[in-house]
Figure 1 (cartoon, rainbow, N blue to C red):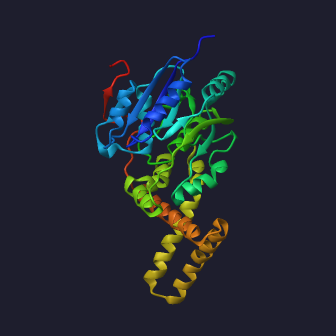
Figure 2 (cartoon, helix red, strand yellow):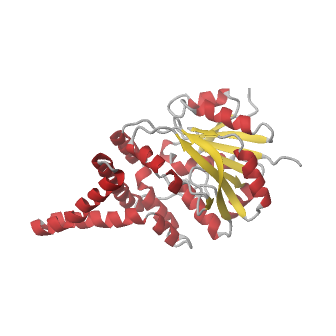
Figure 3 (tube, rainbow, N blue to C red):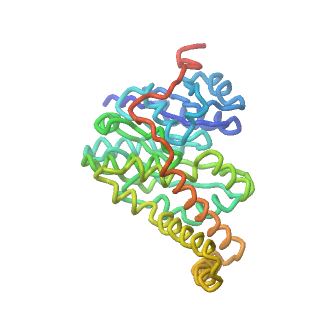
Length: 332
């Protein structure tokens, strides 16, 4: 039986440290498949583009820095993709042996499924965000049927064509969740198999610097962007449920601010009691006051970002971002 053609979209922004290993891991697993590897770069300021070009893969890039977002990368890769399937990877991931064979076999045997992923292995994290993510890895990447595939996966390109676009270029996070909502609304299913998919290299920035980096990049405004993009759509309630913690905490933040504006000490005390109780709860859950406080600060920043994201202008996800081809796969 003839092997299906697989395109690979690798989204990158300053991934010089890992991009070569990412490409090598993909090539080794796609050796028996007709394929095309596309590095979709968001105007890296290091030599990511050159390193990828030296590997002989297709490299495409945004031309406008303001177009940078988590959602734009794979949509850019999708624009240059072809074949039956598209594999989504980040430039700090390494594809695990055997995943492609299992994923292709599953999709060929189960035509109602639009995409499939697998289990994830993370390295030792040096900041709270990735430490927390590793602790919750089974919740973030649950096995079985899912409403979305966090971290990417292997998708049918025909299913993506049915829902109009791959990932929403306006979203600074939740782009895979929004994709899942559209696919499920269209009648497709998604599954995470109990087979290794990728190994992930964590960001090494300290916790506070990571928080500031996320804020500057727009990552923390994504909950609001998700809600705004889903407004009036059949999956709005699903989107609201996905960011309900941020919505609740954002409402609480507004209540605390109003309490302080009243200058009523008794009202301020009452307003702060839930916050103190929440910090205590997170401290117990994390078995660390520092991590408990980090958890609350992270949620507070996400909640503030939600409000910011609600007012952030959205671009039409079907309109391609301004881009150029840096290196064609056939160029040597």
